[in-house]
Length: 419
Image 1 (tube, rainbow, N blue to C red):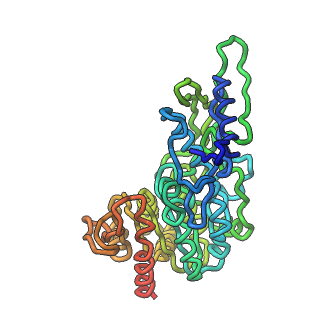
Image 2 (cartoon, rainbow, N blue to C red):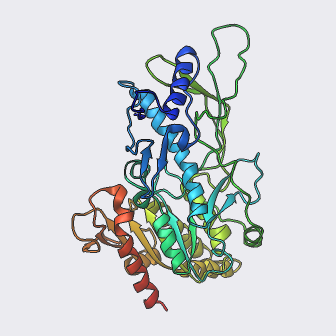
Image 3 (cartoon, one colour):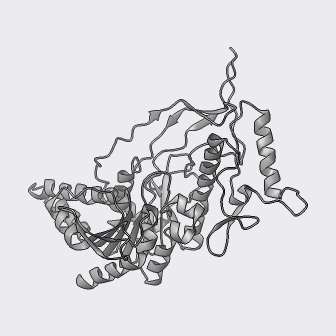
């Protein structure tokens, strides 16, 4: 896994991890601990955006022969480190800024964040919104597996961000899977009648899903935009009530485990992926100055976007004939009319449920699906759904990267037609 020097001595990174392994072996009750940085894992991204170790070798999953559980935990811990690393790249390479949900949340309040370019919500006329799929991915990622085994170029949204910024567009990158505050993690209580004392994890220990407590506060301009907007509409997604949890997970053949206690609190305004998207739309995009909104959504992101359009359209319909709601209905429709085109990349959405949304999908939405045909080749449409074209790749996780040139050509055509 880690390379050795010519005389057989371990590298610095290997020695550090070896110490962690030995400590873990000596403490049967301790959960395995992992580094909190890429360098700690012995990895870096080279000039081509490929994950490599100190000998320029690619990632290897099996770090303990035959110990699938430990290797999986190691992989997941590396993934958590990648989340923060890519957040940093969105800021340093993409020029984006973090903005909190809920707006104005303190460090001690459960919160998440999304990313936006400095001009996205206060100046840009054209705004590109990027929505990832479901699972472990966070803001900026199309597919963790592709990032680890291939490159940042194909696995992250950075090429889309850079292309949009080169065109002078504002950019918003959502973080729809960040729905819970981190639970409290403790070692299992010893078999003793005495009360178990909790012990905090070390600074480099990764034992669960990371919260967003390190994210910066929303900019003052963004906060003022949000506070001046109307209160967010109710979502048809699950409620924001907290759920209790007390569970244990195996960490290998030795039977060590991590016990999760306390409460998994849902994050207000980001209780589900759908809620997160509605919050970003209602609280930030609607009060922005963008007259033209474009959306790219991968995989389950298509479900999230379809939910947004359907629920907002139904809200407009409910209020259309209400003497007190007609003005609100017009405002909702006006906000949706700013969406000029949507590009799905191998989306798993169902056809929209309203006639207005279906008409929009037929004219202004395309789904780049996995196919061996040349990228952009028409593949027909499902009943009451958007046209489908080839993504130019047969693997789901690569569809966004493979389709990018075709997606921007589609946006250009749509913007020209609606100019």
